[in-house]
Length: 310
Ligand code: NAD
Ligand code: UDP
Ligand code: UDP
Image (tube, rainbow, N blue to C red):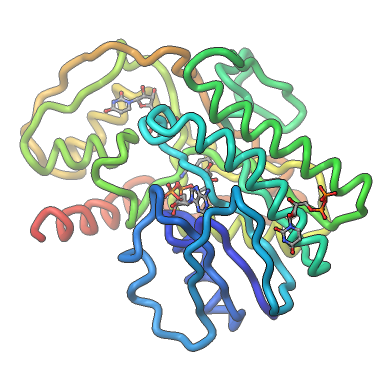
């Protein structure tokens, strides 16, 4: 079986490539390295793996057959998509259109990597797939949220009109090795700050919540969804919810750092609460997270220590 992974040189995409290779798939990774890094796939030696440097906002025509297309290409960290607003809109819209066209041409099953951000600043907690969300289309985060909402809509249109076999995963905050230390997300920021002995920067008063999923759990959930026959969106994330202030204290404890906590301005439209309802994933996929926050953080801290030593 052959799988194509767009965004395969990024954080989640590279872990997904590893999982697929471990299950004997042939894997084609397509990435333009706008936020990804060849270092993330440098360890892969299998002949069954190939890499194509391509911007998926442009059409992609391939000779070989494809059975499964995992479409993950998109900037994902707030500082990346705020820095790359047009590219983010284009990859969600044009990139998703092209990859749907490619999947249709090849008769491949297509999976869209969507996000909890489609719920915006949610007015209900936890968020189930039935919740329609609360998104500010003209705010700075709108470039990412609306791109992903368009991507979900066009995926469903290809499903309904072209009878394409599609899946939509709504990924909630995920962390682990191969995140960039400078990608601005809270996990690399706090761990980097703790290991360097700098103050941990909590935005706002730290009362906003997030729920953190370890990368091995996340990619297992994504894979199970692709292999299922369910075509509506499914949340994949860890329902253990923490305030950001609590999370900063957890990072200090796990790293054993003496860093202090300082408070900075809360970014515009920063969601106040986020926690996945994973009833669907449990029922349909028999999936739930198995890695504890403590273990996941220890593994991630080991990775960042190695990066900092270099
Ligand atoms: P990442 O930035 O590490 O990976 C994204 C990859 O896509 C990068 O390698 C980048 O170079 C590539 N890419 C971006 N635009 C491209 C284009 N036009 N053509 C080809 N390649 C392109 O981010 P990530 O955290 O691994 O996120 C992967 C996917 O998962 C994204 O679609 C993101 O929206 C989604 N997601 C991630 C999280 C999370 O917590 N990590 C949460 C929700 C959704
Ligand atoms: N496409 C692609 N590779 C393919 C087939 C299509 O990149 O192997 C692109 C094509 O250029 C178009 C998009 O996918 O931009 C959608 O193509 P499709 O044939 O589904 O529909 P269209 O929108 O052209 O009717
Ligand atoms: N955050 C923080 N300090 C940081 C980075 C992020 O307090 O140095 C907060 C951010 O405001 C948000 C949460 O941590 O409330 C998660 O931010 P991240 O960028 O990781 O992901 P998001 O869920 O906002 O996409």
